[in-house]
Image 1 (cartoon, rainbow, N blue to C red):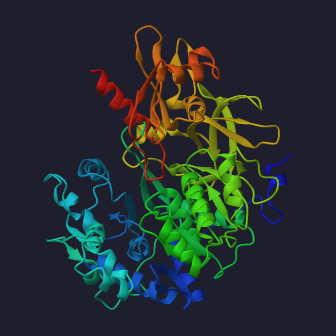
Image 2 (image 1 turned 135 degrees about the vertical axis):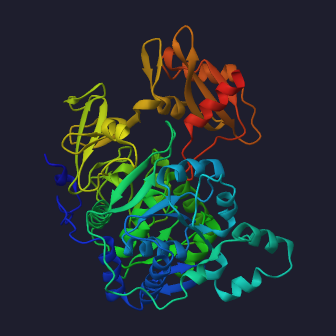
Image 3 (image 1 turned 120 degrees about the vertical axis):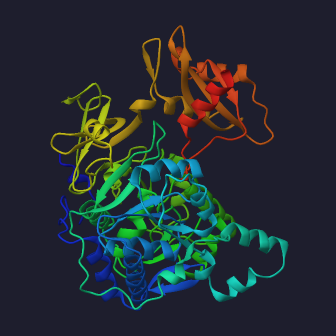
Amino acid sequence: MAYSDFYQPGVPAEIESPTDSLVELYETAVAQAKDHVALDFFGATTTYRQLGDQINRAAEGLRQLGVSPGDRVAVILPNCPQHVVAFYAILRLGAVVVEHNPLYTARELRHMFEDHAARVVICWDAAVAKLQDQPEDIELDHIIAVNLLDEFPVTLRLALRLPLPSLRRRRAKLTAKADGAMKWKQLLDNRGLSSTHPRPGVDDLAAIQYTSGTTGAPKGAMLSHYNLYSNARQGAAWMHGAQERKEVFYAVLPMFHGFGMTLFLTYGILKQGRIHLFPTFDVSMVLSAAKKHPPTVFCAVPPIFETTAREAKNQGVPLTSAKYCISGAMTLPESTVELWESVSGGLLVEGYGMTEASPVALGNPFWPTRRTGTIGIPFSSTRMKVVDPDNPSVEVERGERGELLLAGPQIFSGYWNNPDETALTLLPGGWLRTGDIVTQDVDGFTTLVDRKKELIITGGFNVSPTEVELVIKTHPDIADAAVVGLPDAHSGEQVVAAVVPEAGRVIELTELQQFCRARLAAYKVPRRFERMTDLPKSMLGKALRGQIRSELLAQAD
């Protein structure tokens, strides 16, 4: 059977390939949606007409600063209206967006700036000091500081100026002085870009998106207008039935991450939706917004779904409007699905993506054919195969473990300034090596087993960290766990677990080991358990195994 046999009726097997750049995507939205609300930020709204005007003004401001086609422009912003404007203003000039997490340290930013060499930065004012702390060899021509409060509703902005300690603390988290930087308002102080200014082509580079770097130094994935526009169209095909100018998107995922970029900056604009922007996930803010403008598209990670559903039940806030809900980035527990679907108006399905795939490539259908516990089947116009990890030219039998390979219009063209890694990752025929180990059932639904590079090899046996973690997390005294491999003279690596106790609980390590021994083969049982108060995690809530491993190694020295 074909994968499309399991699609929701109406979802095509192939999308229509884009022939224009993302500039035409947003200009079409502006022309058609006009005075419909595009962005909602704490109740302050921006229409599509206003959005288009601000993009043109920002583009002209950047042009006057010397930004030319092909130049990299760094963006260091949380979710806010200025982020959307900056993204499309950069693209309008034919320049390249380079997204960064505003919570990165100065050291983390240094590596990326050394790589992409952007000379112009659009930065949250609270993060400007990190740029000014960079060594002299990081040459920046212009830093444009963005004050989030400028886009707040007037009443809220005034309230934050009151001389109350709690409000002062909240204001301090939102903004900071950025001496020596140009203000965002100054960038927009012009008549706008001429309509005759040259436009980028569909195959031009649009963005450099850095991978998380949990298995090494971050690498910049090069994504073209064609890649990103294709993935937006694939999302539109998958969410069959979503209507233009009718959908309400909740941007609770960061737009500097690939998942958030596609959901809100491209797909959300493609559907001409109302996009509610949240600088960080705060369940009280989400439920407050839901009382006025309930979400119809709510895509997040499992912890956000769980927290939102639980609080919605407790507070009696209906979420039955939420029809299109996709979970990604980590395993979606069935208990989370049941909880969310008890308060929402649609199915919660799991999908799969990675930065190099713009990022979404597989998903469960919004249809009874979905299979909870799997990452689904390939999106429209996406091909996949499962191969021998040691010989990717050989496909494994259906049901056997193997490495996932992907091909399609959303697959990137390579890593910026890194031909060696590109050659290892992109195979002939446009196939992307994901490094993820999966199995497929008889119908082709795919289950993620583990990351190939994070497998622990002990005594010649492969151990999946995810498998061991799932067992440990079922113990009533455990709140969280991460499993890594540490060097061992006898077995090559030993399985070690970092565990976080539930509040008020005391972990008995001997009893915990016995608990695991009853549920796992002996070689999979951790030889050591290390108590931790919490685990370092990414912005999407994924445990950073590489960092945990480094910390445990440092303790042993």
